[in-house]
Amino acid sequence: MGFDSHDYTTDDFELPGVPDAFQRLWTPHRRAYVKGGQQDYTENTCPFCAAPTRSDEESLIVARGEHAFVVLNLYPYNPGHLLVCPYRHIPNYDDATVEETAEIALLTQQAMGVLREVSRVHGFNIGMNQGKIGGAGIADHLHQHIVPRWSGDTNFLPIIAGTKTVTQTLGQIRELVAEAWPSK
Image (cartoon, rainbow, N blue to C red; front, side, top):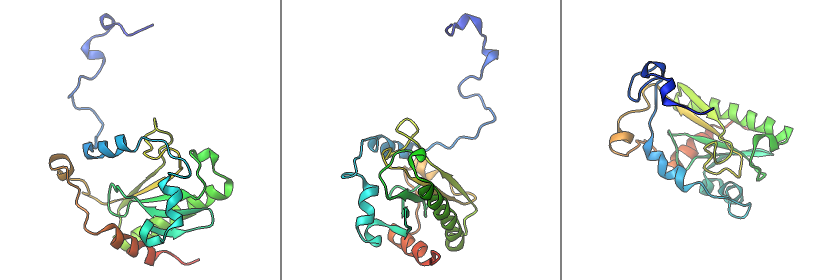
């Protein structure tokens, strides 16, 4: 049974442009990254596999655990946008071991505390995009996003000017977060 336009009137659904109950965040500046990031990665080509083999400063790693590490996102939605990645090259959350899952959760909690301390964060978006269809830019290596949010952190600049204001370099942000990270 398909959609037959004769079965419905315009009163049965919302028309484009008609206000509804949803608020939308349009981020067209991210489209280039999402489109460009849709490739397959192997352990030899994966940036998340390569990161732990270099210095923390070079890779923007803020903390290392036994099974996972925390790194700054190179294409942040907001300053301090972190990723928690297992060391193993696995694509899905249900591929992670109990130990990996527990450490990802712990590192996420620690990251939230550190970001509150160093940035006075008002809230967070936390999540994982699973698979290319789910929106993962690097679908072949599991990673959880921790995006710090502040009241009024979105404005017209990304939409009108294609510009996102970031008040510090990634290196400066990495240093602040790494220095505030709790010791083991």
